[in-house]
Image (cartoon, rainbow, N blue to C red; front, side, top):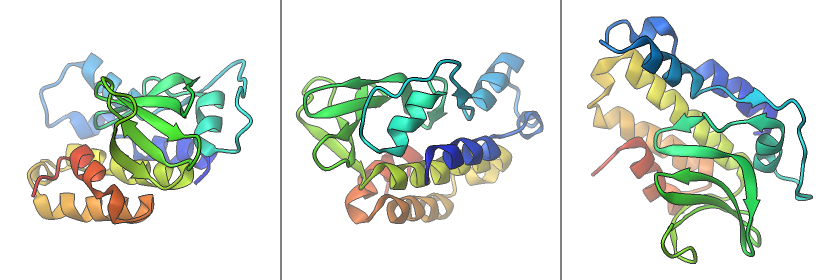
Length: 181
């Protein structure tokens, strides 16, 4: 998936105000949830990195700092480090693109050389898995019966694993989607 398709499909996956009517939530919170599915085109985009990568283009061309998929958030702009590019956070830990393999990884915020989770084999597959994840969270908002449905969660975890590139990425998606065996 490329960055333009990701922006479009993430927007389509967003819940509506009506989806929240069954809950007693503030208007501000509902607006914040809906906005967390929106990437805003930057007025003066600059592509600072020469690698051909959909995530690099996404974060260069769009403001995704309000995008939140589970406990994953994107940065406003990419931060280049010696061995990787920082592209976001998973809670306190750092979401990265490995400069050698171009895999997406989560690195420990206290020990940056330690990879907690391999996330996806490449940027395109990562964006595919993020759309599945975002749609999962929207489905749980629309249908409260899905909140505790382990069968549904496992189905989506497996879809994410397939989209990301294989079983090696399973632990990350189990954590992200809250599936605990």
